[in-house]
Length: 624
Image (tube, rainbow, N blue to C red; front, side, top):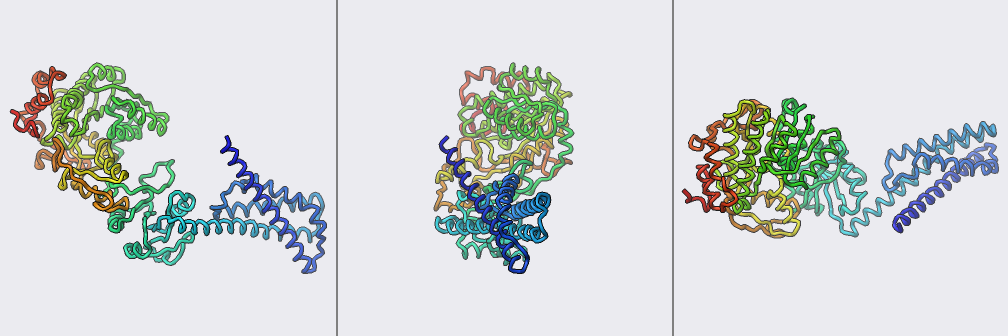
């Protein structure tokens, strides 16, 4: 309460201060105009002015207050504010002129005073406010240099750069002092924007970074291509200068305000932007009841977002972890208030729970994203990997068959290809289950979608590196030569949905992940993006490959046995299906895991090895 009282007193003081100043300026305007007209020979009676001036001042101040003139932040007084003050001031004088004529039938000389006062008053009131802003800007500039604010270079000199400059001045806590703007437009070079000089062209970037001792760069171009952004980041990061940017227009949501954000490593993967035909997806999803298992996870929640955007009839999120499920529930209901959304807590390995969900909602489309995926952890928890990734998938697939679901789509992984770990083996087994179900069930269309790592997903390497860099290091890498495929979550889910529209039964769709990325290079880029130096400011430590971990991941079992789909050159179909020696027979494979809870870790791996001939890893390498 004391804080609120202080704020109120401060605002009241500022309001009274500006009212007194405006009253003084209005009085001065009348006295100056009256004095000048008398010097020019006009018959002006000063005493008559003083009789009505107090009422004029009260009327003007009331009108200013009514139109919000005193709610303006003078520190950011803009051209829009000048226009508003000018309009209100002129309007007040027109009303005063009409009122004086009606009440007193004033003389032409007195009318002349009001007319000239109107223009002088506009000048005086605006000049006072503009001067106040200029004074504050000068103080801010001095304060920046005194407090050692980061010397900042802004790339771009358009409307986006103007927004950045205003944000930096408005928020001193950002701790940045704009030193110069850099632009390729020859018409802008040599000019200033909000008092900051514009230099160019962009080819001078490296020279200017050194010459002006730049500590941070902000890219203020709202429609900059990713390749151009990557080129800028690569050039700047060599000087160990931090780079930030404005969001691209394509990244902005309807209600999102423009803000300065960090450059993420996903901006630098040098991947071509994928343009998708969403019409097919919309027709696929529209008016359908959609169930997403694992709907609270990284992939599942993005699936939920995109499905919701395509006007499904009903969306059911099924997840064992209630916190994640609750978070996506709140987000979706805020963005889509009319969405028919149900959130169910439960596990896919509980067949009774799965059946109850299918009985209750009769889904048309099922996206099966529920899975354990952490490779090293599952090496020591093979029982849980089998329980969720295999038995859970089987439960969902059987329910799809029993309840006449139109489409079931399994979210798989590149680790299913020639698996060297439990996670990959169980995902490969899940793929085989889906393909076998496709041969048994003519009602449901079963398919799987396989892809590599998604950026910023739960448990992935990028959030780990970010946290390690924030804590001052070291950044831990398993091996200097290890590589991985990466894709954004949004991109992966868009391709999952698109491939689903073309499934005819039994396909394993493989997403083109572009070029594999060296994890060591990724870590170095992230350190440089923070304005730090690898192995100087932040140490990089190699810890050795973890159990079941590969140096290089694969997406295809056999590159020759693939076809590109007709819908997109980023989607392949692996056409070699199940190995004939790995045909699944329900009784046979289920017998292997009949007493799963009583099995040890090695026993589970032995069972997987018998079922998946390509499974070869660590302590199961010599198991026969």
